[in-house]
Amino acid sequence: MKKKFKVGKIIVALLALIWLAIAGAPFYFMVASAFKEQFEIFTTGVFAIPKGLYLQNFHKVIEGDFYKYLFNSIFVVGVSLVLILFTSLFASYPFSRFKFKLNKPLFGIIVAAMAVPIHVTLIPVFQLTQKLNLYDTIFALIGPYTAFNLPISVFILTGFMAQIPKELEESAEIDGCGKYRTFFNIIAPLSKPGLATLAIYNSVNMWNEFSFALVLTQSQKSRTLPLSIWEYQGQYNANIPMIMAVLTLCALPMILAFAIGQDKLIKGMMAGAVKG
Image (tube, rainbow, N blue to C red; front, side):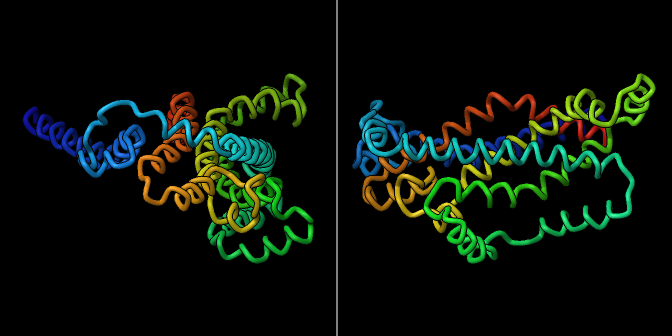
């Protein structure tokens, strides 16, 4: 049994190393290439270590409209995320704790909405955005981002809330707490791990979203970071290190956010696994 256990550990370690190589190689190529000069990548090899920290690539990117793209992305993702978390929090509570006739039909509609491909709705959303005079503004992205991330958020958070012991609510009712006070003082605080998981998951999806940002915005003043990558790629088509510098700067905020919130993400996932 000990030999089998050791063999199993070796196999797991090898698989982990293989996964690390597959996942880490593109990231290393991106960061390493960003510090190279324009033609250094062709003379030293793709995965070669940079000869020096050539920071001009980052300076050129930052001197452009990068901050404007960054602000637009932070604003759109931030507002959309607040709306998603608050709406899913308030919607998941009755679905998970109350019994009423329309509970299952309404929840079934929410689950069915998860199967709708978002790109099918591009034309209707585009037409609606024009009628509301929101086209080519950063506010045009908030509605679609919120709407298309709500179904899965409500679905996940409803399952999370359903596992919270009902005895806590019963004890609160005995002490004189109403439904609203029970929700804000008991259910909402206990749902923080689930909300943290949803925050990181939805933030990554919205941060990298490209299709709606391309269709619903036109000018540089309203565009987000994924479109900046697209525009920089056209501007610096032959300058691969410059493009890699743009990609590195665009990925850096999400990497920092994940590094800061990874403990909450793991706690949320573990809490759901244990309760399930």
